[in-house]
Amino acid sequence: MTNVGFKKIIMIEKRNVTTITAFNYLRKQLDMGISLSQCISKLPLENGSVYSFVPEDVSDEVLYNFEFGGVYPFDIEKAKATRLSLVQNDARTIVLSEIQNYLDESEVNCCIFEEPNASPDFPWVKTSGMEYVHLNNQEMFFFFDKENNDKEKVRDAFTTSEVYIFLCVLSELNKEEISQFAAFKEIRIDALELFTKNMKSFFVRAYDGEGYLMWTARQ
Image 1 (cartoon, rainbow, N blue to C red):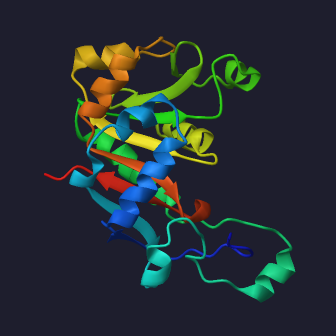
Image 2: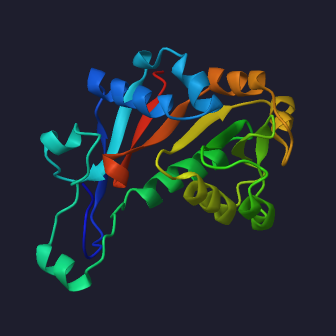
């Protein structure tokens, strides 16, 4: 189910949804991803906490139904007037701000967007100018740290990698470890394993594209 009709800005709040249902949903999303997702799947995620980004006052029935949309009010008259199918997701700008604020906090903070739908030899990749790292020239990822936290580039990586699934992971690496992820460099699987070992949080797509879940490591 998708939200159809006129887009209306609604106050978004961060809600704790730590439940077995949430962990099961996270693992289902990770199962659809590529190598970074697979590295995370091996970790004891149930030791962490899960949060959602949803409109305030959303019902518990909708809040914990991560597979489906409907988190925004539906205006049938405006839907008839526009005749367009538009997925409302006011949480996107908030999640993007969380990512960029995290990168700005420390020299060791970094993030990776997993690109599950493309590889370096795709024609659009070659002409896009986007910087990426790759695994065996088949899997592609967008890496950022404080030094290259360009707001437009991070936004482009977010938008490009958000397809039928979405994964952005926040972690910590020292300067030498960060150098493994230099633009256009081929990385090894152990670099991804190290990245996930130091993982602080990650985001996945939820509510049929209308929002996100955020996993965080417990302090």
